[in-house]
Amino acid sequence: MAKKKFSVSFLVCTECKHRNYTIRRRKDKKGTKLQLRKYCKYCRKHTLHKESR
Ligand SMILES: [Zn+2]
Image (cartoon, rainbow, N blue to C red; front, top):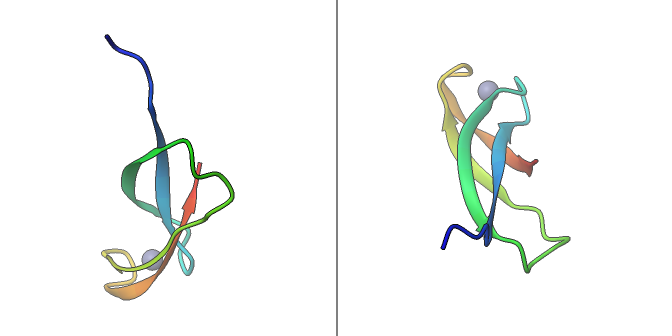
């Protein structure tokens, strides 16, 4: 039952390098890196977050 179909990755703030969000994604789309504008509580503003793992 507990097969890992999802990989856990992080959304890292590009300004302070904090891992602010954890996301679960399907593994099938490799090579696509997410870039999202999210609120960073360390920068206290919306910054660009990049996916990393
Ligand atoms: Zn930040």
